[in-house]
Amino acid sequence: MSKIHMGIIALVALAIGIILASNVSPAKYAEPQHVRLYPQPRALPDFELVDQHNQAYTKANLLEHWSLLFVGYTYCPDICPTTLAELKGIYPELQKIPSDYPIQVVLMSVDPKRDTPERLNEYINFFNPEFSAVSGEHAQLFPLVRAMGMMYSMVESTDTPDYLVDHSSSVVLVNPKAQVVGRFKPDFVVGQLPVSEGQKILADMPALVNH
Image (cartoon, rainbow, N blue to C red; front, side, top):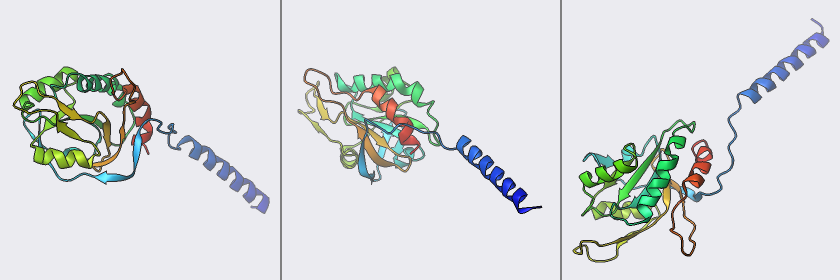
């Protein structure tokens, strides 16, 4: 075979390789616009909570998932139900996002006195029975919430029947290694409820889970 023929064959093979590579290249996703990513993932401490089925809930439950985690409580009059309604609205679309790891939604109640597993089960089922709702002793909750870059505090004595709990309103993003990578923080506008918008979360998640 002449050198010319060998050169032609090599060029054809190269062209075919380029075409195949372009056809199987990873999908392109728009850069996240709304999430506030931390410079480095934050490791979570070990913890022992209880879910709405009265089953143990630990860091192992966050592994091999992308988790959208929200700190709140079931007696919350405004931010919590509105945020969960936002997550409920986008959940079917979240499940359609191609990913090696499924996306889950978790409500972490910081009001263990009132939020028993039975109460959590009734509350979370109203939004979506596939969501998880967990709680536990403050000794477990405080360091975990702090490690996520969030906060909560009792506004008044828990001896008052209708006491309120002050808490962060962001939705935290936890990666499949149980590390906090960032959060979706609401826009604070005078006269409006500070709630993380579901459509903003949905817009960013394809790029985040396929990074």
